[in-house]
Amino acid sequence: MSDVTLAQPLAPQAPAGAPAMERPEFQVVPRAGLPIVAVIIALLIAAIASDKLWPLEFFHVVGGAAWTVIDLFLGFVLGPIIGKLSIPARVEFTTRLMPKMVLIMPTAVTVTLAAGWQLSTKLGTNQTSYALHGWVVASFIVVGVMAVIALGLLEPANIAVLTELKKPRPNPEVIERLMKRFIYTAGATGLMQVATLVIMTKLASG
Amino acid sequence: MSERRLPPVTQVGMLSLALIVVAVIYLSAHLPQHVSLGPAVGLLAASAVLLSGNLIALYRAKGFAWQRFLQVGKWALLAYTLIAGMIEYVFLRNHTSGGPLVVLTLCLVVFAVHVPVLISFTVARYDDAASPVGESGSA
Image (cartoon, rainbow over the protein chains, first blue to last red):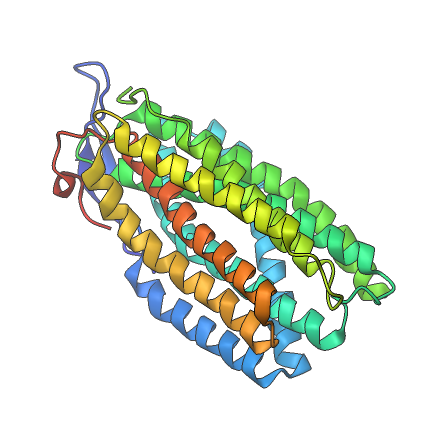
């Protein structure tokens, strides 16, 4: 999935005479990762079609763990580090990280939600008769808020910053603004993931 | 900065998505009981109106980088149509039918259109309408 080579000199819309910096070559959507995503989605469809407990549990737990950990790690560990990096280091880091996020996050979210709904249908936990139904509805609400933030702010910022970096003369101000938006929204969803952890552990322990 | 004065597409889009989310939570929180579709239909209609308003406001915007918007939008639309299809498959697999299926499917249609609009708008708003899209490389 890594296709990064330091090649193109970056000539941002910076003051004239400012030193040019190197910008890694990258793909906005890493094509090498698409077959992996296709295989995961095919396995997910098979798991839902089979309606067996183990595959559904596997996809829901693995997808959910990936989603939660990535959000928390991005928002609270990587975010502050990126903020303190020099501009060239930040650009290089962004061009290596963000294309992977374009594939990883939508896949993790789709797998978690699709397998989760099928699992709850199989176990009957999404029915009003379930003793902890209030907790299940609370999880819907948390996921709903996270989805609106991720789809409305985080994902567009991810694609936009990569498109900006693809330009012959990227605007550092635009990149800065979009990266801030990405990191802040990742932090917000990271905070909400703490609520998800509370709800899911409560549901698992009854 | 190359940003122009554009309609509040992101804010309106997020409100529209939030209405869809509330409609879906409302329906799914009442399973398997019979549930009145009225509130969900109302939320869906309001969300669809916001989507239409967003598209009309964008269409009227001057100096908007439509080439870039369409370049990104078509791929985002493909991706989110696949995701919506996946969710629809889960509904069908669980024998969702009748009114709830129609409302949920229409919610997915709004979702599958509005998210690509938000993505491609965010990309295109920082683009120069005059420059050819090929200049900044392909995805």
